[in-house]
Image (cartoon, rainbow, N blue to C red):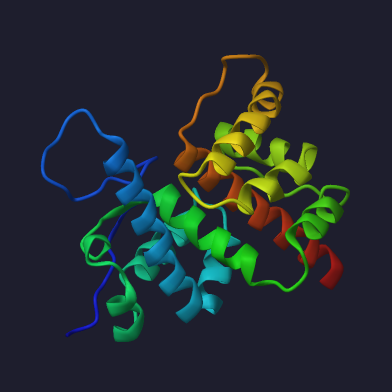
Length: 211
């Protein structure tokens, strides 16, 4: 079997699975969508770690980032990783933020130092630049409640534990957004934006320490 490429639609906030036309979206669709994000990004993060680190550290509104993430998305993964993936995940197309968020979360997991310790220390250090309103909200959440964010990343997707962690973070999101009801996001969207913000916050500390 030939190695497969993952193509990413950069403009989408949420991943869009290539499925038969079914409306409204069901819980089964969401689970498939999220499982595919996790599987594809695990392969790419493991096999292209250097490229992933370089691209995720950039301003995601820049042309360099957009070119880089598109090129990364079109990178072929190994036959072994592709064939280890459930068949229903192999033809899924992913949106930009979920793709980046999945990559970021896998990179966060790759460090041997516990994420809670790293985020707690980073929250006391230099702030990372933000590039959109949602990004600013996510960065506020990571810096204001690093223990809750680390707890979320310790949960499996589509589980009661994840839902509980997201519910615990909701008041933090409200505060960072400027008031209750001023910000809403799906589980995938919230996890993705927190992962990319966490990654860049940690990267900002490394830059500061290397200076």
